[in-house]
Length: 486
Image (tube, rainbow, N blue to C red; front, side, top):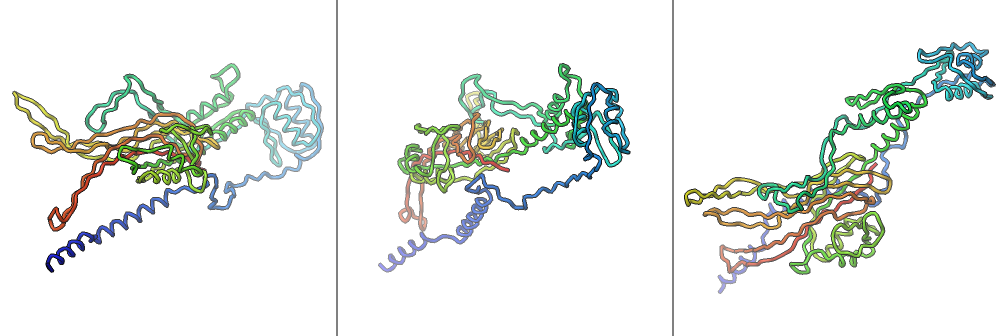
């Protein structure tokens, strides 16, 4: 009897033992997870700008020397007189040298009535004749054209891509998998050798073109993509328009957005066939979640995907949504995917897992059936292409992508060979929509059924261990949250 008690105590002690290697590995994984969370966590208020340097401009100041004779009072009234005579009358009683550029017509007729400072008279004259007048302490120069160099804040290079699919039917084997779809139905957007610098040059040429003569320019424009600069030579009035155009273009290029993609695996504890109950989500999220259709403030009464929501309390939308899901079951958070995108510039973000397996090929020859095994793989995960249009309060997103997961994993016997059989399930993403910053959008989901069988032994004896099975339904969601980035 004593030996029996001793055996029982030893069995209980061994069943509760945990190896130090397991504890060390768990602690290391937890530290890595905390480091990733700290690096990818966004501030609660996404419209607050954190200043890390004094708010001053480091651009050198372009100081202009004071020219006394520009402040001298003068008055002039001329009617249809040559330009050279008008300039001489304005600059009378001075010793300043007057020079005309080779492209200037000194006999151009001028009508001008002005009273004020000499500098004001020269500005009024330059505006009327569309010439540039440059002044120094001892010289006045009249020029027909101005030159300037503009730096475009974008790396050189063209991009070509396709957002969406061509509607072809994929094969049912290998990495591609099969996707049922309507024959011939597809939606895509293509980018064919897009050159941003040539687009800027075309916009400037449109400004330099003469009215009614598109191919004849007043001046010239030279695009240097390798240096990310554009040289422009044109009249003063058109140069002002070019500067406004380039400044507007640079402002649009400076806009960017951060897209946070969170992949959640939800397992319901309400029954093995249950998935997310959106009505419960709305109830438990009352006060912390606000559901609405993208682009509006209408409360969504439906229970499905394509919903958008945002946090209304101290939690952001994703955090509040996860807390609400945990009222129904367990939520496993995978590593979030974060991408930063420039305004109107396409980009891709993906997270792919490749699972190896053996592919069986059966052939029959003279009533003899042979099976060949070939190593192949199945790729699962999320792959998304995005083109954003960034505005002050909203971002317009053109998104195309696919979420795929392994929904069934089993083994089968083929001619005395045990092979692994995987069933994948996918969800296509293709839409153009408007989202508010900080608003979370459910863009895709797939549902997986899992069956788990467990068996434990102690001292190589089944009666000292246990057996058990479980059936669960796991739903994988892809959440997208855009954030403004300066």
